[in-house]
Image 1: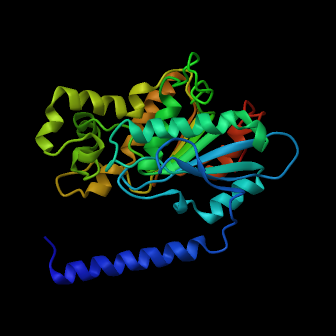
Image 2 (image 1 turned 135 degrees about the vertical axis):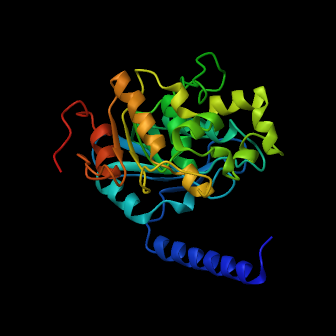
Image 3 (image 1 turned 90 degrees about the horizontal axis):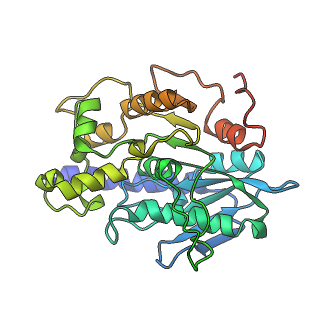
Length: 312
């Protein structure tokens, strides 16, 4: 329960956040194609901006955050959008079903469906279907990692031509994303359980935290954890986190638990062992050969991606 003063302060912060978002979006270029349906649900829509230039364009797909309970594609930052377009990269921003209507795996499989849809229509929009990357923050970061590491969802025998397309990605640039949603694994890594976050119960259709111990729920959490799907053929990653990498204790907030850089440290350890490039950025480690997520996406989506990383 909130006191009246706490409720008023919360509403002020929410109004201020909305005002900042409106200011941030002001002047953002309109999409070339808006509210494009990629699936049957009302949330299965995307916006698409087409980069200028000769030859098929590269593509980066934005996946919004919000704990799988809120948010939409309008949170795509203007500066990032314009920088990608200037680099010759077309941009799609997608919505996906939220957990009030469909728990896991719906957000992840919707992201996969959007990637398939964009590949199916690549020829119409001058997009190279073999050079597709993704990025997002928080839940959007986790959602981008899932199709990047998971086995391809393509069904070559499907009567639906979109479903026959690949869900695999060329590279990803997640920001502040949990790489595991398993409670015991997160607690081992961080010192605190991911189940502290209120997004987790609706994500797995749980009404009581005690249900996180049920074998069926534990299996779902394992399936939802991107790091569990890593194999040697997965794409390069640039993962960024803002907090320091100190282990947590019982005073940690849900946001600290969900956005901790130790998720990235353990991801990098596993990717290093598999021989996959993982650039990890957090306060104790700021070296970035690509100069930011846009530079990373541009370098890795380029047909010359096998060349050495550029110097800063």
